Image 1 (tube, one colour):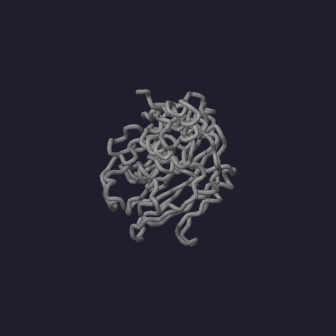
Image 2 (image 1 turned 90 degrees about the vertical axis):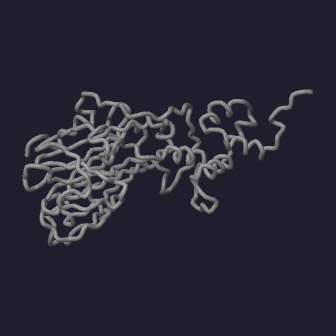
Image 3 (image 1 turned 30 degrees about the vertical axis):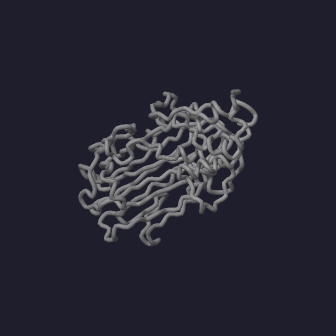
Length: 342
């Protein structure tokens, strides 16, 4: 009996078969087979079906999607790109940029003069001392599966979040810096809000305070900082200068979204830390935990794209190191934020 080609099957049957094939195999091995397969694999219907199968959307989904193929890959890669964000493995994966006072320490929630984290699954936090403590991670986006055409043409949102808290009996200063850099570590976009100062002996209850930090990565630093809308103390309780004063000793979430950044982004440099304001021996500075860097679908003005991966590298651990050129390496430049000593 003569062999029968699979292409004689109705297109809806072929689409159902393709919906069960891993996306990497579809693009790298199935799509080049023939023009019929190429056209079917390029259909938005197929990628929407794959999104439904894998639970990325439901039948009730009513949000516009500019490109279902890109949407599928971004959802499949969606995860926190920071390693060890909640101190479960001590200081592993973090680069210690400044280790002042009694140095970085890991403690368990709630800690002295503290409360449990709002998410009960978060059990630990990092805590700073009486001189500047800063730590960082450099995320290699390509190593995590994000290919160049996706980053340069689609430019998905890059969402950064951090949580910090103060001890109720000690004031502290919290610092955050996030930079998007090129393959050779040139800074293409950055976000560095004013340091946040929390006063000692505050009687406010522990609550979640969420500042709304607008996506203004393209603006100069003064204008970008002016775009930060913080939920903060009444004006009569604010300190003078460029610092933002935040009275409640609560676990506070800071968030920022990079959107429509320049082409060429390959790394995300994330740095945070601070120190106490009493200059007490021990660990009385800001506590930080549950930090995250997540690449996600655009949430504003999505732009259709035909970008697709030429190769889909398997995500691996981020082992990239900054070069020694202090003019181009954000990790080296981090020392400008403060070193050991008061």
